[in-house]
Length: 113
Length: 87
Image (cartoon, rainbow over all chains, first blue to last red; front, side):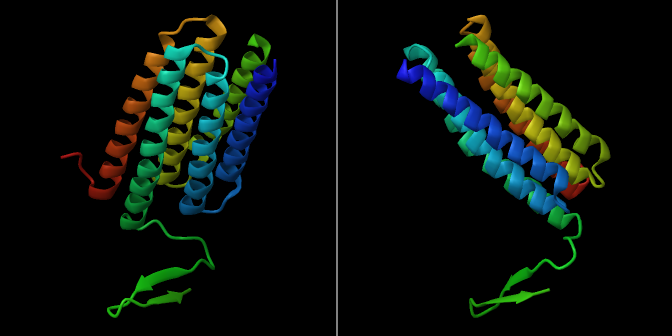
């Protein structure tokens, strides 16, 4: 009984985080901020929903869901990194007023607008 | 617990349509790639939910394969954006 309530709570928390990610995808001003919002919220939301489903299932189902969650945790940040690097190299501009960080030769960092 | 899974699946489907809006109006190609990547994650979670709604365990294997294919698709499109070719 408690497991059922916990499962429902985790599933709806996951749907909430997905909704926040979609809100960021629709409202943020450029590619990099959109990527920032959706990647974090998707990783967390998918993890929560699949964990909530695992509370309802048998042992083999739990193992398969754990495989899916680990796969998401590896592939989703990698995909975000690759997309943002491709966007930066193909010259898509950042939104107005954002900082650019450069690493100097002595290892220090400078921020510039 | 089926009603909760069904409600969550319907809400996720609505969110997929909102993502499709960004994929349609996105000003640059990278915006569309981000939107399609998000839709891929949501579809995978939807397949897992449908597996629990219909009681078919082997749908979870489909979800694993969908995750792999979606990841490879994202890598390919990003490489095409970066270099201009797929070679």
